[in-house]
Structures are given as structure tokens and as C-alpha cells.
Image 1: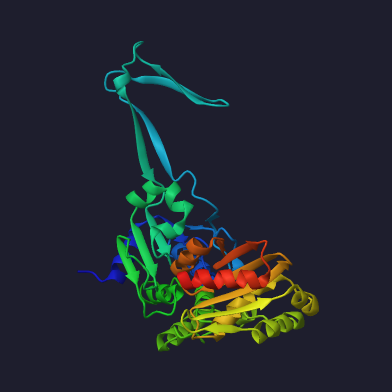
Image 2: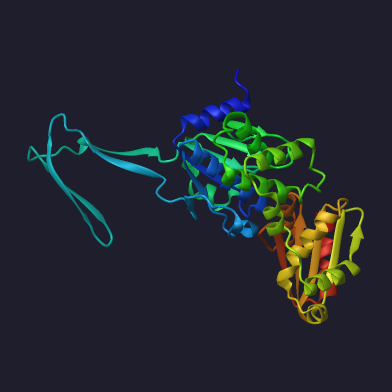
Length: 373
């Protein structure tokens, strides 16, 4: 029996048009990995399409983007209106596109047409393979799955992930929990089967995904294989220094002042493994910053606090309106918190607005709901 990597190789090489998807609100490393796979597939003669992340391209705008990116899946399949000509030939036809209808006029050889000679047939989808990257289940695609259910039922799915939360829903599942990232897994496939077709563009995207997922090789997920993968991608033309410069730009002095104020008030709850802090209106005024910089500060706290499982920052928008940003390492856990607390998940964060509550009241309510989860 063929190994899973060999099955993926055969599936890709037998396909022509490949759709590449990441989960809703995909992190930066998944976006970079999907772009790297797109460049690789194009290099081996395929026609890849990447569904663009609904929140944009994040920090990865400096990377070479795929040639074919779409914001939503449209016209994924044709439908055939067929006329049986065994007993009655068609001598001519024309079409007319009206405001509320599209009319087809046919001229039969015989004057009478039997309605039973007509049939309406759905054709094959224009995609003959779907590759999902970092999607624990089909539900993580959000509306994409709901609006295109037939696509996921009829077209083969290759499911690639590095998370233990993955439900192995694909026809072929490559879920490697020892890998540091999706980019690490894809790089292994590229090196094994398509080393000659791995160019600088695909290597640059894959290395960016690797660096982003491991916080520049400092996360606990980093292992010896991660460094070997990075070394190979650099050999293939990836510019590591450019990636680091773009992903870990030096922060401004106002940003560092705000970060210092956040860290000075950092709290810790051992039972829920929650680290949280609060920011007042005065903090923004004195540091000359704004709430838009809090998600990055929250990301830095997460990267530098390995004991934590859940991270939050609350801030005062007005004296009687407070907002919380919550970050968690696993999207499924974040969704559970959303069910208990409300709010909106965007760019990998849960944002909750507390109307008619000052920051201390919001803190109390948030902690109570998190404990209940």
C-alpha cells in the first residue's frame, strides 16, 4: 500500500485544477504556506487557485502572491442542458440574455418537440482536487463550506495539518503533530517529490510560514527537523533575513511604552492558565498609542509566556464601554469562549465589547465567564 505522502503525490500529479483553502481567519503562517504550495503547483504544471483570506494578507504582503487568488468560490461547475437528437435533429439555435432570464431558442428539424428529449445535467466541478491547510474540520471554513457543500462531497480532499485537533475528514489525511507547522509538512513533500520545481518564490513563502509559526524558531514546536527544513529552503533561494526584517520589525518607542504599561499590570491565574492585563485611556494618551496596537502586544505576550494557554487584554474605550482582546493557541478553544462570552473572532483574536461597563466591571465579568468555560 502506498504511503500517505505518495498518495498525495499521485493525487496532485493526476489533477489539473487545484483549489487551496485555509480555515476562516487563518493565521499568517497558513497564508504563507498556501501561497508557497500555489507557486509549487504552478511549477509542476498545475492550475492552482487560492481562496484569499477574508481578513486580507496580514503580514505576508511582502511575499510573492499567487497568480490566481479569489475572494469567494463562484462558477465552480457548469450545468448542461442536453437535447436528445436521435429522433429530432437541431438545425439552429441562438441565446438571449434578458434582465431576469437567459433564453435559449432552438430550431428542430421536426416541428414537434418531445419534452422527454430534454435533460438538465450538472457537469463536473472545474476543480478536480481540493487541498485544505490547517483546517481542523470542514466547519472551520465557515460560509465557504455551507455555500459549496456539493464541492466537498464530490471532489477529492487532501487534508494537511499539524494539529492534534484535526478530525481526519479528507480522502487523504496528512496530519503530523510532530511537525512545527504546515509549511514544514509542505516543505517535506516538496523536497521528496518536487525538489527541482521548488524555486525561490515557493521557498520564500514556505520559509516565511515556518518562521512565523515558530516565532523565528523560538517556540516549543521547534525541533531539529525544523532547522533542517529551513536550511533546505534557504538553499532553494529563500531570503531568511528579509523574512525576519518584515515579520519582526523594530517597534516604535510609543509602542514599547505601551507594552511596558501592559506588562506592569500583567496578572496570572494558575487554574485557567490565563494571563491578562488592563489598559486605561490614560495609558494610550501618555504612550501616544491607540488600541490598534494591542493585538500585536498580546501576540508578544503569548510568544514569551510559554506557561500560558489563554491571553487577554482589556482596555477602556470610554468610561462606560470596555473591550477585551483574547488570544488562544487553538481556534477550537477560542470558539468555546466565544459561545460563553459572545464577541467576534477576527484575525485569530476574539474581540468582546462590554457595553455600559467600566474596565473593572468588564474584568470581573470576563474572568467569571472564562472560569465557567
